[in-house]
Amino acid sequence: MRRRRLLRYAGAGLLSTLGLGVASGWQRSNAQTGGALGVQWLGHSCFLFTGDGRRILVNPFRSLGCTAGYRPPKVSAELVLISSQLLDEGAVEIVPGNPRLLYESGTYQFNKKRIQGIRTDHDRIGGKRFGSNVAWQWQQGGVNILHLGGIASAISLEQKILMGRPDVLFVPIGGGANVYTPEEAKQAIQVLNPKLIIPTHYRTKAASKACESVGVDQFLSLMSGTPVRRSGATISLRSADLPKEGMAIQVLSYPF
Image (tube, rainbow, N blue to C red; front, side):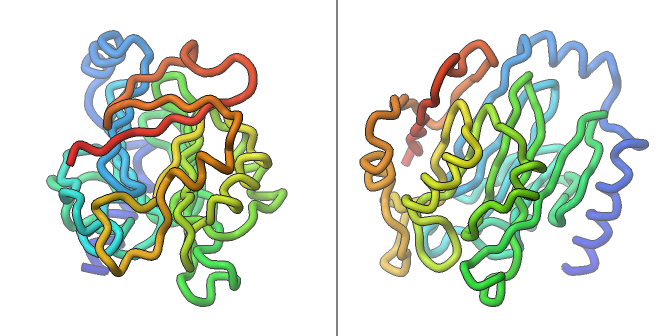
């Protein structure tokens, strides 16, 4: 399995020259989406992003612990990004087909677009317990996306420069040993100043007794005064839909 991952990673490094699909297919898909970004929540910190004729999957998981009641995210994608090789965000073996895979920090080219992986710590002790986490930054459907993965450390100045100001920030809020608490998530939000916040990595009724995360309500209470939008598991975003001033929180609901 380790050898397969390394080979797939090496293939990802060639995306700038190999490309995916043909130009006419991309143009048709892009015209159909009208420049919109589709976001589908598949549970925990796993999302499927569609737009610009591409499907990008972030953090597929195995169903156990905090993800026990979610269905395995067995969806097709051209590219899979994982924040770590922990079971709740790095279960690449469940993804069908043979998508490209990125799992290390660095700058990559995908479909002539830049994808930035930013290394952070996955715990509060310099990565000594859970190792490193990769936050992913890219643009799709005209929207600047930053998915923080399973970050647990404060954002440094260097990391902030690489992350930029996101249109949409996917931030873990559930707490525990390896992701932000609601209070730490709020601090990161103040540093990054996003337009739209989508909380991830929190306790839902999918969780087993072994899950130590807290639910989304604690975070929302802490962020009192910030407008909250609620929706189903899938949303479509355009740049024009984002707040012109300030920020808002988008809470997606999982279809149990």
